[in-house]
Length: 303
View 1: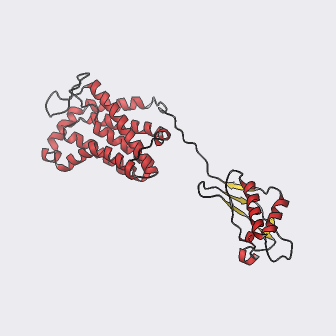
View 2 (view 1 turned 90 degrees about the vertical axis):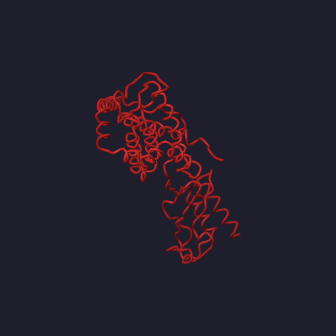
View 3 (view 1 turned 30 degrees about the vertical axis):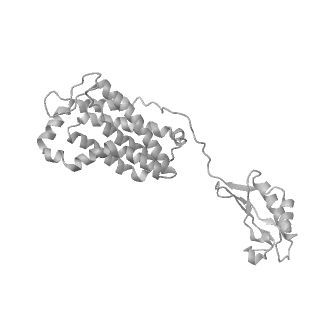
């Protein structure tokens, strides 16, 4: 009868707590132990704790103790617990439930910020006006042996090849949040490549070579492709996506992206305005991808 009473108590308390979920009683007294063994201060009063399985971390606790035994009783039995619950009606149950957020799987283009456009245009215009002066000063002050040294070349290579490799590594080697971050980083790389390639073709800017006349815009062209910098843009897109999802890496990533941008200028591959525009585009692409976190997280990439 004691076993049947325990089952009855479990069913009754389960229905009181949540009809659609499996709940468990965390009360040793319900198993017929004496009050000292059950850890109850008084054999006449017992606080019941209902804990849900770890699939969803939700807990409930009866707001007030329930009288489960008459005065003078030395044992708290399952029958007494069941009778106390029936007599008390529906005890007040306080839920400690974390907020449940529904994953937004829609495509978002983000809120338009018109105040950013003048700032970005002004910064790029100032950089364009000073490109020749900056390149000449760099050639005069930094020896070519330094500008084309292996650390500079390696940093530039990281911006071109290392970013997609890093995104792929997070996808195939990472788990949970890191895996989803890799998918968003790879999405940022693809979107950024489409935007930058389109601008390169439309602007048709000549790459710097240290000679007069370099850096001119030739309109739509498949030959000249200096503006904007793809390496800088890709590096800053990755830094934005990963840095905002993993704050502990944020400044390391932005610092690395800055070094990638500087290496492109040192190698005479881009003008300063090219890398500045690339950095701004990369940041905006990264923010756009982060706004579509729910839709990208649904994409399954597994082998």
